[in-house]
Length: 490
Image (tube, rainbow, N blue to C red; front, side, top):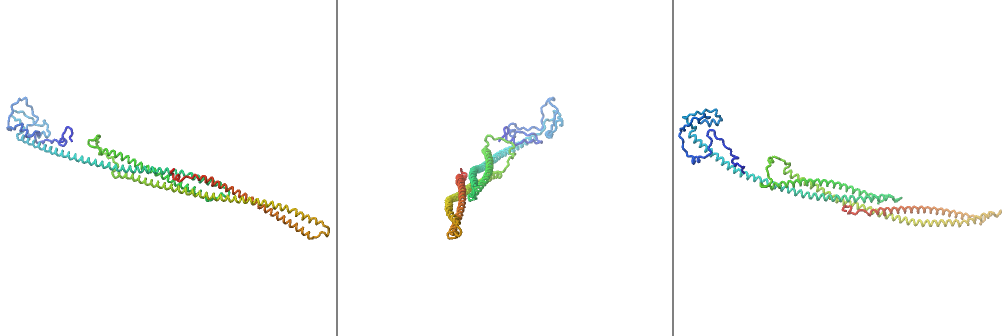
């Protein structure tokens, strides 16, 4: 490439200074002298035509061969000898040999200058070609490096996009499982409330039925199981929230790295497609001295690789946590369902026992009532017997009393007297035994009444227990959530 207004040789060649011991170089060649100016040697001495004296002035230089040396040494004209004008003094300063030598010197100098210029021109042309080829090669290598860089960026972009899609999918899956866990945790509140209400209602049992039976034990176990499940669910819910935060941090790093890669890919692609004829190219002086880089290819690749590895680690932890949550939901649902069934079985058995006891109490109450009726009839019979034997005693005692009115020796202890006395004793003993039996019957009647009262009270207790267990508790336990709700799917 040539600069406007000057050839390339002008840039590299510099004019040589004229040797001080010769006259200034002649710019024409010897052949031009021969062709245009014929050579006629001058005589050694010649005289010029006379000139008027008014045309001569004092010369500023010495007319000898010394002026060239004196001038070259920078002497001023005032320091030279004055030129004395004399018509008889010769006007010439050099000899023909000096003239020939000067011409030959000029020829040689010209040929040397031309050879040097030609060599410089050839070398410059060769250098231009070499530098141009070298520059094109360097540009091609730079373009190739840019292409390889674009390929590297595309590779890491694809890796980042793939990992980002996987991370987004895993985050969405973990979010869904977290929501499922929250629904399952909310569903455990109803069974817990039912169990606690069952315990509260069973505290209203009365009397002997207020016992710590198997139903109460199973209910307390059910409360403990549900609370244990809730605790584990809450722990995994907190872990899921923390893992979602970690996933979003890793996803943010991937997105930021991907955005940087996209910007770098756009810039490097633009640089890769730039050509010497492209628009928008310009000089930026000193840009090669600006080093704004903060990484090398190894650290650049390691940075993205670390982001991907970090994302993969978080994604693996998220997948494991998600599997654990799904397993936890199944385990807790089975545990609560198993304990629910155990409580229901205990309730069923207890209700059956209470119902059987109630039926037996009712049977005993019927028998007791019947026995009370019989005792009451027996008491009436005893009382009637006592009333019926009274006249017999009266007759016997009247007879004895009347016989005491017999006079003197007639008061004989005869057989009749003995029989009457014996009769009175027998009747009196009979009355005493009947009265004792009457008291025993009355006591037995009182015992039967107390038994009747106890049976009736126990019957009320059993009825109350049956109402609590069968109607209230089992009625509430019909609303226990289905397994699909305990798993959090609904």
